[in-house]
Image (cartoon, rainbow, N blue to C red; front, side, top):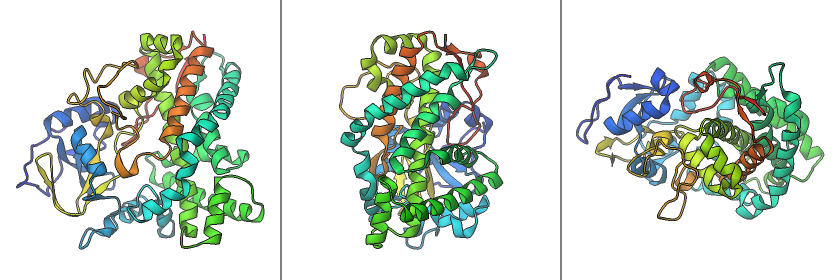
Length: 427
């Protein structure tokens, strides 16, 4: 990786950045690559996937500032005399048709108050801790059923792909039942999610088009034949009071909830299982004491969470961040993977320890984000992880990787750390 340069508030060059998000080291070993930046150049220029340049922020204190400081916004079009709608420009650069861009660029994940507050209020009740706790028996039932089927999914060599047969089906079943996506349509979402997360612009663009067209058709069907799910509640809000939810926002909300509700959790389960199987002493601790599950999920989100950095934020004014001047209108990527391994905040951060404790209350990692855009479905994702890890290890105490650790296939996707497959033997 190109050696990074130090910057100071009086020196913010606009020339070629020192870092590319496609740098092989950042793709193959993001812990080392982003960790080196954290120690040598904690606020560094970076070339984004569409060729635009931004700042990369890697230390935990600075990452928390970017995610929680109102001087950084999600919608660059709100900045007076700013860069305009950079999100639309970036999406167009990868082939998203103009009439589909609002469904992707103007989501709850990309909005600022008051729109963000309005949209989040419409769905937050479905994701409260109380509501999530009420869902636990159903999550346990789905998990048990998937585990019952695992032996039958083994190939001729006795190996089972845990991503395909467990890590993906669990969260997509849960979120689709909540939202109201018919069971027959769920394999489509798996395919769309895979294509959307890939690096082929044509495949990515077609996946978005197909998803959006599908949701429009699903909304029309449910208007004609209502059921009792979150989708029906959102349709009622839209039809009863269009000022609270536009038709585009309705489709976008369904898209966001289903994709965000299964992709991240699937790879938390995949990454976390791989981590436990390569640290058998940690797997043993959890198997012997399932009460460690909540702490284990938090530690796995810190140690190997699937989201490496956040969606871009833009400076609404000049901001001095970690000794570097971020100019008004410039974009910033907040790197979660380096922040979650920051030795300024963790003792032996590279050590996986599901018994790890802290001196203060609260969530000490940034795997679910921070601030206004803290993950809406965090409680559900944590619960699914707790149930998945404890039932999996309890049902199959001899569970082991079917390939050597160094032969694990990781998808080379900037911003995400996810396994292509996870072959295991059930023992």
